Length: 271
Image (cartoon, rainbow, N blue to C red; front, side, top):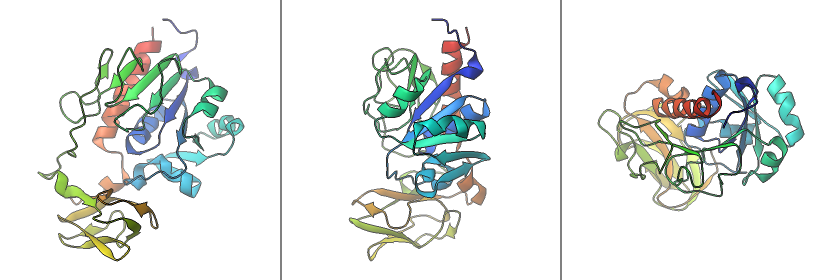
């Protein structure tokens, strides 16, 4: 179907503002699209230095020179665009913002590994990131999010690869990179994102129970102070490469997914 709009006039609504959705938003913003993001009231991002969802708590968040600003009314969206920023609203199901914007593209970037309500008729182009969506059924296009040969691939029929439950390998480490709490309670970080730690270091405590690093490296991600966590929950991660700048820049995976989303938009509208 041919669009009557020019590419640069497209309005794009992104559900979710976590690490992967933020990488997508950054790439689309740099490509001069009009982006709006929606989030839940209390997002639990781990890689907080590269997630626009931090604006929900702090009012705004800048990632690699691009800034998202929290607004409370949909009527404020246009003014934030004019400032050159990304507006973000608290709107869990997205109905209010979608009704106001009538977006040309809706991207489900929640990365919940299941569909939380996105439908193929939500916009002229609906894109689902990762498993949980079926291209041609509940979305028009799926983007592969699993690391490997097909990362960022545009899928026009069928689904993405199922979630493996294993984080991507970095310097030979997978599960060891993750910080998980072994009890329910209130999270209190003892280290900061970007700080170097050794194997066995106490990175955080949940109430009075320590969360220790299983490997040496830099703290790449960590939950916010005072968050209530559940037993077994991911609360942070360690980067064994030890490069502090990696903690404050968009990951290769998020950039690849952003490229796949950009390809999908051009595939649909650049005809």
